[in-house]
Amino acid sequence: MTPSTAHLGLPFFDDAHRELAPRLVAWAQAQSVDERDDRAACREWVRRLGEAGWLRYCVPAAHGGALERLDSRALVILRETLAFHSPLADFAFAMQGLGSGAITLAGTPAQQAHYLGAVARGEKIAAFALSEPDAGSDAGAMKMIAAHAISTGAGGTFDHYTLGGTKTWISNGGIADFYCVFAKTDVAAGTRGITAFIVDADTPGLDSSEHIEVMAPHPLATLRFNDCKVPASAQLGVLNGGFKLAMQTLDIFRASVAGAAVGFARRALAEAVAHAKQRQMFGQTLADFQLTQAKLGEMAALVDAAALLTYRAAWLRDEGEKRSGVGVTAEAAEQRNRSVAAAMAKMTATENAQRVIDMALQMHGGLGVKVGTRVESLYRDIRSLRIYEGATEVQQLIIGKSVLQGVT
Ligand code: COS
Image 1 (tube, rainbow, N blue to C red):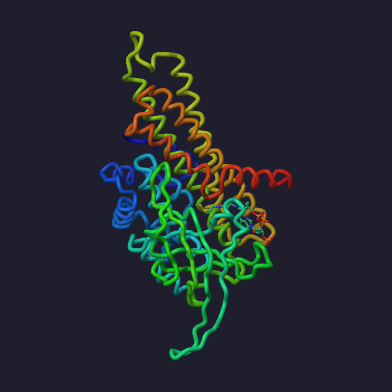
Image 2 (cartoon, rainbow, N blue to C red; image 1 turned 90 degrees about the vertical axis):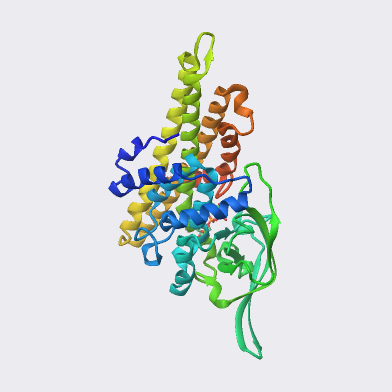
């Protein structure tokens, strides 16, 4: 099944984006990965995506990336296209970007050189570790501690942080080579007392063996940090600047989650159209019924509305990056507009995709709930997108706050 690329004619895109999509479609259609074991499949997708050069869109050119800086529209096209073909391929791609995003934004040259090239080649698997058992939507309520100390021993002095606590719902948990971990470095300072660290998966004191089973299988784990020591050089970004770094990283990738949701929805619509055209009932095809045509019309409009918000959010971000010379006030206002646009896109695209997939499933009748039917797996695949990287309710809050401030 081939996705339409008609939307690439929209003014949000430039020629580089228009050239990217058909190449990726051709590549994705030629891939076949056994996905029965989600961890093995994810590793295989990372390997193939790296080998084919697609992961180069997850990092900037200075570290082996395809483009000078992270390009939101390219990320959206990549996720939309991969999600149409394989939700696990999309997952593998997205997590390389999200997991290394904080290093791209705030890493030292040494950290960037060590991790980003390997991420782009598919040689290191990345993960983003923010959520905790009691801190999901309220990310600032995290309890994980990073205590600073300088110890002296036979080998000299060791300037380090000791991490203690639990992270959960960590995508790529258990298969990642490193984690960008957020922890409290000043417990009294709320969101202003959080710092990010890069923790290699083989660091003593880190246990990532607790796999979490979910309705649409993908690598997911709880991480336990017990007397886990990392050198001070593992600090990512400024001390106590971790919450903003986490939010900025999520901002970049929220538009791409919307892209993935648009890809799922486009696939569901394509499946519905194909089914409606061939299914015979009451002496005609399902597609001949006006009831079916009305549903397909509604589905197509829901997909387009989601896609337009998604492309706008990505375009706004890319435009803002280009104009980084504007004054401080303008930058703050632009930043807020971009965050709100990304929130609108993520909320609308994931919610609309759920509706579109549900309608496609309904149109399939009994086949729609048969395990192995594409709409059945899409029905499970889409559900977590309405929750992760900021649940719909978090996006509503971000948008609502801005509406009340008269910004939106
Ligand atoms: N970019 C930069 N800075 C941001 C920001 C953004 N998008 N959003 C918030 N900040 C800054 C604020 O400006 C504020 O800075 P100051 O301390 O200088 O005032 C600080 O961060 C705290 O912001 P706020 O008061 O809005 O934080 P809250 O604790 O109220 O949390 C929400 C806000 C709910 C939006 C945030 O916790 C969130 O996004 N939660 C969802 C987390 C998530 O996506 N989890 C999934 C993890 S990945 S699967």
